[in-house]
Structure formats: structure tokens, C-alpha cells
Length: 550
Image 1 (cartoon, rainbow, N blue to C red):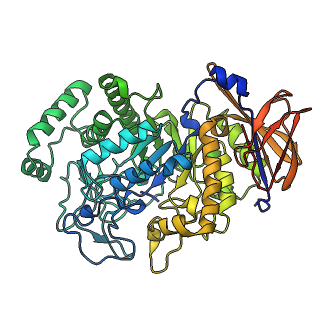
Image 2 (image 1 turned 90 degrees about the vertical axis):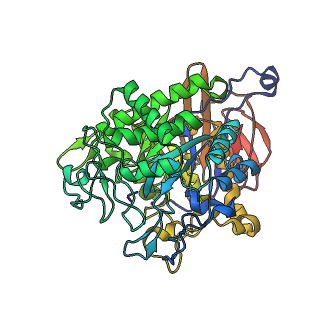
């Protein structure tokens, strides 16, 4: 859970070759494939997005006074389902949703020096095998995945293997052969990131251990009270017999996390605190996840979306795309892409967003299509635990959307990026200021918010329908107006995009280079205007700062 100058955007023109009307009638155009490398991911704090079931707002007697925004606020899986049903994610062009952990959290809370806090964020696990009732039920989760898949939206959950939740009067520490409670990490070397606790009172799972350990007594007692002890033990026996892994702490946790794949068909995991275990842990985790995904597909052939493999993206805190494949601990460099990860979160995008368009886009395209080819990064401008987001005061919400959603790589829309949700809440301490309630009143009633949201929706939909935006090869066409192309090909499918930025309002002429032949019929999805390519250029007359041609 560890936790940037271009000129002001004047006008934007995006140009993409769509099929002609005749081609559409013949239905010869291949269906747009889902490509993880170009995914538009919506990241939400389950507890802060939308309260869909008020009956589960105060479970486990979590009623103590807390610091501001450090209590459970009511958001739940049912709330996400409601927004799925309303088409909220469809309008934003979202094709994957990443939710913070929904497993059972510690029942009590702790004071971390920022006020008393409960585990509303989901990273303080008590029992990996159960959902926390404050988030919802297994029925809710099954419905969420089913409804998301029906819309072509993938679901990523959040995996925490590095640590349990804090110890409290209500929450016993896991046995000493499961966790260490000292020393505290000093972050001076590879070892002092791993064989230690991240902070005080956050027991560190002994992920380096391959020794057989027994189930924690408190879990045994809990499962017996819940009437599922025999079932859980039988499943564990089958898992260890099938995999041949020792009954070590990490493998118990991997089994429990893989159950969310085999039971519900989730499509990926964002892995928390990835650099705080030895990298082989994640290589093993990916094997377990892949096997579970294969099992799910075999048992649910009618529910299989496509042939994409299970997706894993790691939080290697501080990793940036410029490091390419290696993360440097100072005394050791690690390639996490070779150890279980399809992608890594790019922690420097929120700083590099200060770069001009061409500098930013060409850098990312060059790295992703060369050093990182076959892998990817997830870009963001704000997140739940980054205290230095791009545009923290929400003064550049239009520019933020343009850069994030048009940048090569995966775009991670943090809930409220699209609506200007405040990241500076008075009275909060620490990262709580980043985790306020979703500003639904603004979304519904504020014209300025509607303007921002419309921008994010149109760019998001464009990205969703055109893998070339995030996964294609970037090539500049013209400096004035600044115009570039992106081309993506896989098998028999090819997607071509031409994008122009900072063009004049009203009538504008966009060069398309040799990307689209003369005579190509294009339509601007932003204004509804149609145009034809003549002499390698197309003309659009619209009052908008953006043109999306298809």
C-alpha cells in the first residue's frame, strides 16, 4: 500500500481512419480486440466510490471515532454494480475496473499518528478467504463480475501477500512461523526492503519461508464457527497436492487469492507492495493465477471473454518507465517483468506529464515498443497513496485527461479524475486527503464538472475503441499543427490513428500523412461532422477543441 509543461491546451484534433459506410454494411471490419497494453482502467476505493447497500455500513461493531476520512464510509460492491447498470463506465470508455481489496479486514483499528483508522482501504487483511461484509457478499461479487463481463469490462482485484493487518485487541497476530513483527524496514538495501515490517505494527508475512506451517489457530476457530472448516481444509489439501508446494505462508495466501479467479472469473490482480518480497514469490503467484484462470475457463466455457491470459500489474513503488526492465535497490537490480508481471505501475507519469506532448508520447512509445515490448506500464496522474499527484489542485483537468488518455501504455483513471474530485480535503492527515467520497453531486449538478467529464468520456471511448492509442507505435506527422499517428497490428487486425493537438477552433486542416488514403470517409465523433481525406489532408469545421475522426 506504499505508498507533471506544455502550453495550455487550446485545441485538440484526433483523426482515425474508420471503415467506409459500404464496408460497415458488409461487416468486414474485425471486432476491436481487447488489448491489456492499451486498457483504460478505472481504479476505485471500494469504500469510497458509491454506497449501494446501506445495511452493511457498520459491520464488526466498527463504531469508534476516527480521524477524518479514516472510517468506513459505506462504499461497496453493490455501489459499483449500480454504476455498471447505469452505464457510467461505458460512457467513460472504461474496459477494466481495479478495486481495492475486498477481503475481510481487521475488525478493530489503530492510530498510525494520523488519527484512529479502520482498514477501510482494504490493505489490512484478517482473513484472505472471506469477503469483508462492509464491502458486500459473495453473491455481490459474482454479480459484479458477470455484469462487467457482459459489457466487455474486466475486473482486477488487489492482492496483498506481503503483510497482514495490524494487531489490535480484536485482531490477534498471526503465528510467529507465519509473520515477523520486527525489525522495521530501513529501506537502505534489497534486504532492508524485504525482511522487515513496512511500518510499526504491520506484521510482515515470512514470504521467504518454504517451511510447512499449520493454519493459524484463530482462523481454525473462526472457520469452525462459520461452519466451513472442513471445506476449507479439504480445498487446501487438494491445492497443495496438485501444486506440490510446501504448506508455507505465501502458498496458503496464493491459494486463497486464486479462489477469486476460479470462483468468480476475475481477470487480473494488481499486486500490492511487490518489491517488499523476493521476486520469486510473484513468479510463483503468476503460475498459481494462470492455473486458476485456465481452470475457470475450462469449467465455464460460455463465460470466457477471449484468449487473453490472466493479467498481473505490480506496485513496485518508485518504478518508472525510464528504468525500463530493471528496478534498482542500490545493491541489487531486479527484473519484475521476468518474475510474474505483465506490467508495472509507472510512478513517474504524474511528474512526466509536465513534458510537452511529443516528448512525452515519443519517449513512452519508444520504450514500450522496444525495451518493454511484450510488457507494459500503467500510467496515472493521481492515486490513493501518492502525495504528489499531477494537478493536485485540479486546475488542469482537461490537460490531465488529454495526456493520460492519449499516452502510450495503460491509462489508470483514479476515481474522480474525470470529475475533478478534490484531492485536498481540509482536516485530513496523510493520504486520507486523496481518498474522499466520490463527488456524485458535482457529477449530477455542476456544469463545469459535466464539461470535464465529457472530455474524459470522449477520449476514453476513443482509447477503448482503438488499441493503437495505448499499444500502437507513435510517429510524428507534423509540428504545426502538431499531428502524429499510432499504428497497432496483431494477426489480421490493424488499427490506425491520427491525432492532432493545439489546432484552431472553427475550420481546421489536419494532415494525415500516408496513414489514410485519399477518399477515406471519416466522421468526427466529437462534433458529429463528416469529412473526406483530400490530398493527404482532411478539413473539420467545429467549435470544439477536440476532433475525433472515425
